[in-house]
Amino acid sequence: MDAMADPLVACDGGEHVLYLNPAAERLLGWKLSELVGQPFDRLLPPRLRAFDGQSFLRYLLGRRRALSGRPVRTSLLCRGGPEMELEVTVGSSGGGGGERISLVLRRPPEFPDYTQEPMERLSSVAHTRMVSPVSAGERAYQLVFENAPLGLFHFDTTPTLLACNDYFVRIMGSSKRMLIGLNLLSLQNETVMSCVRDVLAGRHAYFEGDYRAITSGKVTPVRAHFAPCFNEKGEVEGGVGIIEDITEQRSAEAERGRLLREAQEAIRVRDDFLTIASHELKTPLTPLSLRLASLERRLERKEPVDSTLLRHARQHLVRLAALINDLLDASRIEAGRLALHFEPMRLDSIIERVLAGMDAERGHHRIDYAHPTEPVRIRGDPYRLEQVIANLLENALKYSPGDSTVRVTLDVRGDFALLSVTDEGIGIPHDQQEQLFERYFRARNVSVTSYGGLGLGLYISRDIVERHGGRIWVESELGRGSTFHVALPLLSAANPTPPEPTHPTTGSPQQVH
Ligand code: ADP
Image (cartoon, rainbow, N blue to C red):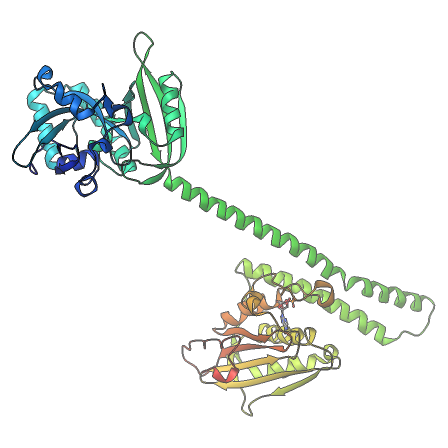
């Protein structure tokens, strides 16, 4: 019986399943182990469980003589619940082991008996050729149907699935053997069933969503169109459907949505930035114009002019120019057009030059500077490195109390010059330390009004340092202070690899190799 090509189910006299051959397992989707010992009723739609006060099997056995070997057309339940239309021949025997009832199942002849098994398909094709040669038209239709890049299916008014193509089978994740013959009103998807009802009532229908195939449990996002088939008299004879797997479209849509959200976020950040930038640019203008007005008045009245007035006016202009330069540099970096001019240079000299120029800004801060006695030579752009160092120092002064100390150290570690700027200031929350070097980023503990700044300095600094083959990073404790480190390859170094940054919380400059 295992070798029989026809599906076969056997029960005992109490109508419990004893056996299912592999062909029946394939057809119904059940495994023998799931059904053995179960009442045969589990394979029957509820409406077929009792006939004239008898069970289905007893009723069939009673009609055996009248049927004289002819099969009965009926429905059985596949695994998962859908009904499949089948022809059943029933027999019984009463050997030593008690009564045995056997059922041979067959696909009704109008359903093409394709299967997923290549050998069976081959023999069924051979069989078709021998018995009824396929006409050229039919063959063309079949080729189109089978190879269409969409799932195609066709059902009658009962409504039983009569045909489907390979694409459809792939979406459902089962086999033609299981799908063809299924009653579409026994599917467990209300929306799809109402589409089928619409079609039988002569209307078009549409379904889009996640479809769970009842025969395999496979869930696929699909789009399906259903249409009625009318005969010459204008009556509905069944329906056709096309079904499309939209997994890829879905992920493309999700990707588009993600890109759109990112773009919106970028626009929001830029809008915020424009507001901040406008305020920042305006800040030096008021004191500047006040001083210029006062200067004008004095000159008109031929009063003596105080040079501090002019110096203050100039400081505000310098601040304005620095803001504008940062804006220009940031947009040059964005466009990949920030030009660097490398030359052999002394990093220690640049630091000294920056420190000398800091006098006006340092206020009551103390600035300590420790450096090696030997010159520290690197290959770099002196103008741009001056900009980096000045930015770190300005930040250290800006974000720490006026009477605290800022420590600047220059050291040589292996192939690198290591510059560190340490302050005793407000510090930076750990979760924001990575983002500091991003464009427009301002730590959330820093209010715009109290400190000013465009959030561009560190962005520009990182670009410059990295283009020198170096690295910039920060260690900081909120409320305790911050240290910004810059490592730059020495002039003597051949192909150096920038050192790994020390861990923001646990590291110290000494750990840099
Ligand atoms: P800004 O012009 O806003 O200071 P930066 O790019 O130089 O722009 O710095 C980015 C952000 O990093 C600042 O807004 C501030 O929140 C934080 N920051 C930079 N340096 C320090 C520091 N020494 N102490 C505390 N926070 C700092």
